[in-house]
Image (cartoon, rainbow, N blue to C red):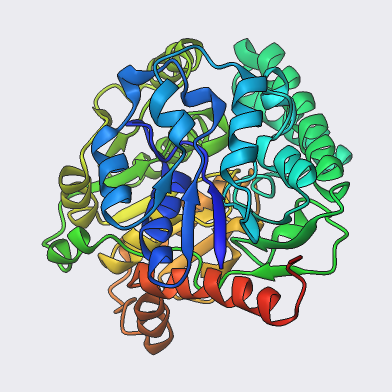
Length: 413
């Protein structure tokens, strides 16, 4: 098959978990199909963050990068020219697969989601992978509850939290509506089978990828390290990831244990960073919290492997690779019982508290810290980790869906 791939952000030097997933998979796909890659309009005019080495890597694997992009990436994007040229270049493709379908309102200046528009214009069957749309609750009353809860933790940010909550709710609903309006839509893949607890998508061909993520090979040398007297939390440092929750939880932990909380990640907004440090001072945690900055993979795995516990009070996840990494390194985890983390709920090295119940999470953390039980002598966990040990297995789950659609004759010829 000839497949046109859209994969938001993978040719940027600034990548996150979703981009890591897509990079790994797109490198494997050419072993099975003829792959054409079309970078998103947002990458035009940003050659300072364009990862040309990765682009050369894709070319070396036989992936055909848009000629128009390669000739014009230094220029300010012209959406009409991009659409016309991409439309010509993907002529003859059997399928468009958007590996991280993005929010519609975020792309209005680029004419909405480009992959969706091109599938309509070229009458090409369309498949999408939803990585983020189901990461937080998109039902009205739960959204309102979350706004109130978040605002109670960070009162100085309540105006932003309210606006962000309403925007995210509206954006997700419009995005799903626009996606389902496409007559060419053949299938949707999702990272987590529990997504429906957060967002309702009425479509028959929805497939849960299993496995949907994998461990980095570099992590394997850090397994079974000696543990230091520390707890770790790492994520994008935003309130939805538990940036403020973790401080309140650690305050309760330090009432019983003199342990340092080490935090790694990037602050995305200056006012959240200011609120973070204000809260540390308010809770008298100056000597008990250490911000490590943004760590490279080896530094992060070293810190994680040395930790006695991961506290991960995230409210927004589709599949937490961080939790998988912790369990591989024999670090128990306490987290909230949200749909994106439900995949871990049956392992004895993971305890999940009701969302926003910081008292229960602190209690669970103390139970782990005081336990002498072998939490990682668990055949089910070992089987789970083995299943998530290679990106080849994840690529196979994508390919199983693509090939199933092909064999069912749902791809328009």
